[in-house]
Length: 99
Image (tube, rainbow, N blue to C red; front, side, top):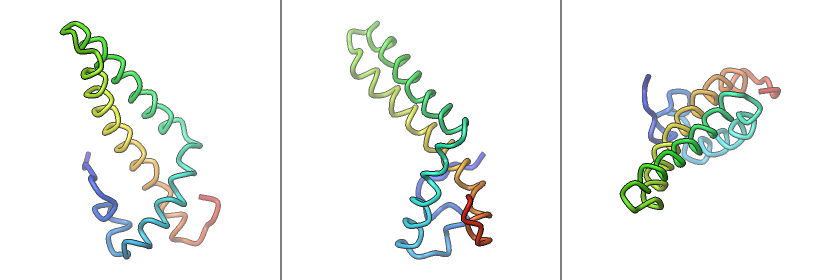
């Protein structure tokens, strides 16, 4: 699985200007929350923050553990949402507004 750090690294958006990438991303991003995968990724973010808090608490630093776990969870969520959104780009570029 490829990791995407920026919108310009996503193949479907790579040839567009920065403004166009942002516009298309925000348009499709909202629709991603209609999918269970997106909610699963968001839940994973919370679970990882909780695990991090618990592990950090064992060392007396639950807030630091929660921050690290939440950061890892945020990364997981970002990759899940990119995966979901990429599946919608083909509809958007084909002119289908239902995506």
